[in-house]
Each structure stands twice: as C-alpha cells, then as structure tokens.
Image: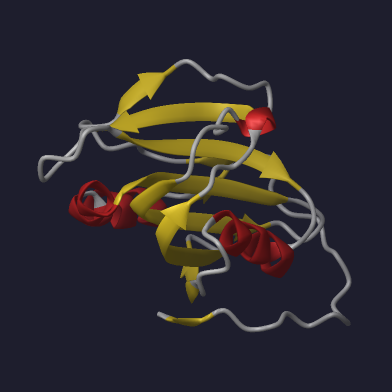
Length: 161
C-alpha cells in the first residue's frame, strides 16, 4: 500500500452503481444497525486476547474518496493512511489501512465513545463518482490483522447491483 495521495480536483462526478453486492465471510456475524446511516453491520470475532470484537460497517455517502480518507485519518488522530487502488469486477475500489488511537466515528455512525489505543482500520471505498460505498472494519490491531484475509476475500466479492 502507498500513502494516501491528493485526488484530481478536475474530475467530474459520474454515475456509479446504486448498490454493491458482496459475500460476507461465514465468521462474520450480522448485527443490528445502531444508526440509520448504516446499511449493514457485522461483528468480527476478537483475536489475540483482545477485549472486544471488531466491527465492519457498510454505508453510502458522497464527498469523494480523498476527503473521506482524510476524515478517517482524523478519527485516528491524524495517523497517515496507506491506500491501495484496486479494480474489482469493474468497480473502482480504494483499500485503506490506518493504525493508531481511534477516537470514534461519531454518534451518527454509532461509533461514539472514548478513544482506544492500538486500533486498526481496514476500509474499502467503492467510488461511484457522485456517491461512494464504504466498508469500514475497525477494531483492535490483532483482531483486524487476523481478519485481513477474510477482508480481502470480501472486497474481491464486490459487484454492482
């Protein structure tokens, strides 16, 4: 992965898929959505003696890939994200990795609470031009690292619906 780079401000938004299909790993348990902004929530089993399960959220919004990566960096106290562009079944996907102290995604996304040390984010943003689809896995670094293989398979299953 490479450090996040500035996007091309001259690109015009384009229409993308209305929804993204995916195949969630069997080990991920579907959970209730604590916010109407979420389309889906999954719990990922804790690993390495960590106290909590990790959580993957699915949401859709606008604002572009780069501004959202910057927002995620802000949730980790400004830690620099690593990004990797991918093409998945004709979709433009940016995979994001951030490690550090997670301060939360805010009450609108059901992620308010005290900051936690040694956290990790694996995210995937499907760029639909005028809107993006977000898949954000956050939890203890050991748990998220253990879930990386399943996360990569999950991202590889993305498809336009």
